[in-house]
Amino acid sequence: MLQRIRAVSLVLSLLVLVVPTSLHAQTPAESRDERATVQSIDRMYEQDGNPQAVFTATLDDGSTVTVDTGNSYTEGLRYDISPGDRVVLQLLPNADGTYSAYLSDVVRTWPILILAILFCAVVVGIGLWRGWFALIGLAFTFGALFLFALPQILAGKDPVWTAAIACVAILAVNMHLAHGFSRRTAAAFGATVIGVVLAAVIGKLSIAFAHLSGLASEEAAFLFWQEHLAPTGILLAGIMLGACGVLDDIAITQSETIAELKEANPNLNRKELFIRGMRIGRHHIASTVNTLVLAYVGASLPLFLLFLAAPNVTFESFINSEGVAEEIIRTLAGTFALMLTVPIATWLATVVSVPQKPTS
Image (cartoon, rainbow, N blue to C red):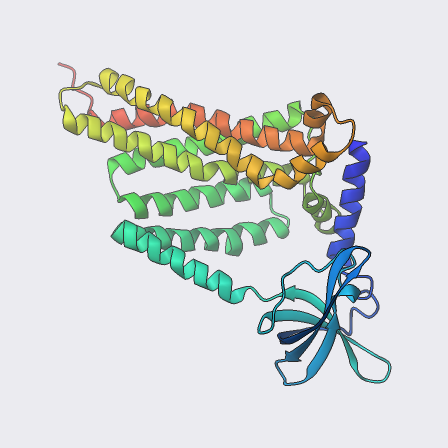
């Protein structure tokens, strides 16, 4: 039953990607997308129990078109559309030279831009100069991902090595920008790089041990069929990138903790610093593990609901399905790396905080 659900879901998703609507497939080479403004909602109705609407919109060139969403989305209108909203219409040519308009999407540029501006304002307002540096680092992260890592993977480069290079570059820039150039930052950076390597090793072993193909998601299957990308490599690269941020957080926390302990009591030796730092690190592990699990569950909530909604699904069949198993392995690999990074980061921080006494 679960295999059939996955197969049907995969086919439907690929159809949505390749053919957004049945009418869109008629003359794809001659169609074009145009932005328009909704002028009025002319009629609301139901089609097969799903809400639909007929509305009038004005294109940016000043021409007016009438759109029936029932011709665009057979499963029902996806968006709450009101007069004044900006939408994306797909225009298909007719034999008489006119165009038929179909709702393709809504324009989200301004809401995203406003939320991004508010986000930046809060980061700078609370973080001050560190907030500015964090935003610069965030811009570098986007650049490293969208200008380097993703294009390189699409070009056929090894996803794991590409992700590793991107992770090291992102960590090197962000950690030193946000926390300054110091021995404690260098120690945290070294620990985080080791953690990323551990995540890669543990992830690779776990993927092989659990017999994961990397094709559990529709997106991965589409990339494999269309772009011929190695699915397990994409899965492992995702594990590394996902673990990178949380490893950064815990390594910096442990490094700063050791530095504060040493400043509060300069007489502490390496062993005492390590023991006290690990006490704090264990608390951090306990909270971060829960955070990781909730983050992955939240990101995969529709998948979990889909399987649990299927009739006669047992717990064993639920966790055995590849889509769910993939998320479990992703969580466990990242958490393993996280737990191992705590003592590594703590030890490196103690090394740079307490210089080795010269032997007589």
